[in-house]
Amino acid sequence: MCGRYFMDADDVREYAADIDSLNRDASGGVDICPGMEAPALVSEGGETAIRAMRWGFEKPTGSGLVINARVETIEEKPMFRALAQGQRCAMPASRYYEWRASDRQKYDIFLLDSRRFWLAGLWRVGMGGIQFVVLTQPPVDAITPVHNRMPLLLPDADAMKRWLAGETRLFANSAALRVAAEGPEQLAMRF
Image 1 (tube, rainbow, N blue to C red):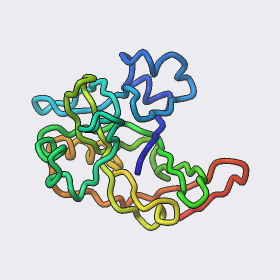
Image 2 (image 1 turned 90 degrees about the horizontal axis):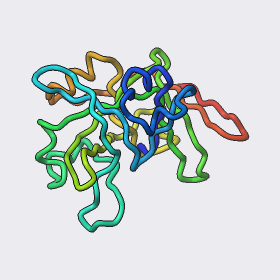
Image 3 (image 1 turned 180 degrees about the vertical axis):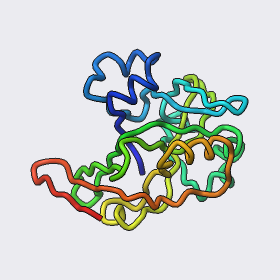
Image 4 (image 1 turned 180 degrees about the horizontal axis):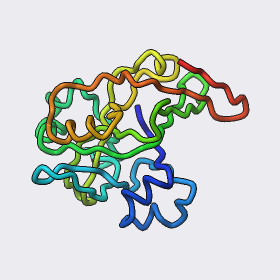
């Protein structure tokens, strides 16, 4: 499950100029957490546009947020079915974080050959305005020791634009990832 990602300062300047909450002190970049407003790219009339959206759909029960959706089941689940084709979005990121369940060790995960990727998502208009969820998929081998899910990564601008245009082929996350533990032990796992 993806529960936090990071935008570096360049991405904040490029994508989040109109989002006051991200620009207060973004000189070192900014962590994006559920419930926060973040920039999301959408396709409008064949062109890519940037929209401010809040991370998370309100749960039907009214308590909490749905922040992720399994890409394998979005066309089956009532909450996502109508959004799967026409309401796609992509959130720019430099890295994302995951916590290993067994010991709550935090891991920093990013692409080895690029400073930016996009997280595939779906959006809707809810009671709190425009909202998004991040799509997840089964993990690639590098992530398996850390977590049983990972976000659907769009590794470059071409993949991001194809996703927004409605391409139905799922993207295999074959890009080389670096998984580094954060914290006192400063472990690094390279795959």
